[in-house]
Amino acid sequence: MAKNVYQFVDVERIDPPKKPIAARRSAFAEIYQPMSDSQVQGQADRCLDCGNPYCEWKCPVHNFIPQWLKLANEGRIFEAAELSSKTNTLPEVCGRVCPQDRLCEGACTLNDDFGAVTIGSIEKYITDTAFKQGWRPDMSGVVDTGKKVAVIGAGPAGLGCADILVRNGVKPVVFDKYAKIGGLLTFGIPAFKLEKEVMDLRHDIFTEMGIEFVLNTEVGKDIAFEQLLNEYDAVFLGMGTYKYMKGGFANESASGVYEALPYLIANTNRQIGLEQNADDFIDMQGKSVVVLGGGDTAMDCVRTAVRQGAKRVICAYRRDEQNMPGSKREVQNAREEGVEFMFNLQPSDIAIDENGNACGVHMVKTELGPADAAGRRSPQAVEGSEHILEADAVIIAFGFQPSPSDWFADYGVILDEKGRVRAPRNGKFAYQTSNPKIFAGGDMVRGSDLVVTAIDEGRKAADGILDYLNV
Ligand code: FAD
Ligand code: SF4
Image (cartoon, rainbow, N blue to C red):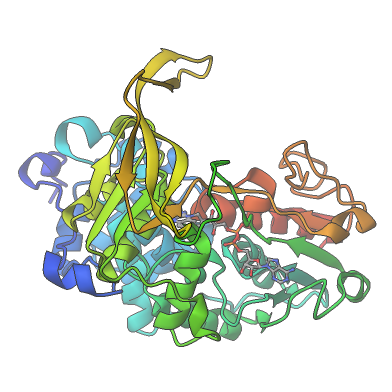
């Protein structure tokens, strides 16, 4: 029977069901329940197969979306997973954490009038289901080249690089200072967006594929970079960006003011039993918490504070909701979980009590001024609107700046004016740094961005390494 191309009219878009709010507010567990097989098949069938798949172009790794939607619709899950793994190193992760509204689903032809195909949820379903049923990436055609590459950083960039190398017969040895793989996937992004078992399973699968991990090992401290440079045929740097952006306020170092990432990491360490020092844990139970910032990190902080039992959690952002940089889906999830949003508020100082502890934030209301050259309207202070937003704890989530290691210069690795490693995508060998044997990708090259863009850069850098090694 011919396919009903108007399926999208009869079958509405549905998202995976969410757990009840009360359960969400107290658990560090993913909030979405799985879609049933028949739901996935019905949703996948909504794809128009529109000839010029904008979704695929907009996806940074250019997934073969219409093709694996068709396979999912036909219940051919192993084939769908194999195809999905050809373009994406971590499809089950991207399905969970990509801001699909800005990427694939935002570009879906059905998006405006009928509701985009639920691409992210189906991508997650395919690989989760295939793994459960015993599927593993097909490595049968791999021929060993005898070459080996040291990968520094087991985040999405390093894993993307290692995935392509091992599939091309080059042995990747991945070094990471943490005890688990994943980088920010494990230690930054909380379990309510991405459960930690997802990366544990990946660790096993990557190891089966032939990737070697050397964890709890900081390069430059526990092992010399020079040793890696001498012992390996090439080196890939995927070390992320970790210098937090300060607000530059008075009293920013007062007790009760916290940086976002150490707050999230300490919470995760406690959740997964890796806590080394109980003093690192920052407990928001019973507190009024104000989080400054409007990106994904800020959303993760507010929702973590809710789960720790905070009395009141406020996200204060200096622009309006439309201009928030984070995923709209996560803002909605935070709101549902009881987070209050205050827009057009510009912090000026941390307010402190007589003991020097933070007791709030001095705020001024803002309104958006004229658009700049990039079309973005900057907030301007409204005269006479100064006030204190009271809080027991303030978390600063303004994003991250590059944090290049001191030793880069010793090996001729040049940085750009912002401190990012210079490794052009379109150079002679993709993502080669100014030292021919050293490649780099992910946040340390493009600045703090997304999981999927880091994966993409790691994979493209691996192509550059393969060309460089002439294998
Ligand atoms: P990282 O993930 O930072 O990995 C770098 C790795 O290098 C780390 O494991 C680190 O331990 C290791 N390393 C560094 N130096 C050394 C050394 N000297 N020796 C050994 N190992 C070293 N993106 C999304 O797409 N969706 C989201 O929902 C999202 N939420 C986020 C929430 C938070 C709180 C944060 C901070 C970021 C979020 N992001 C999100 C962004 C995303 O996580 C990053 O863009 C991505 O992880 C960058 O990947 P990377 O591999 O470049 O770096
Ligand atoms: Fe969409 Fe991200 Fe998957 Fe690409 S990787 S299809 S952008 S969810």
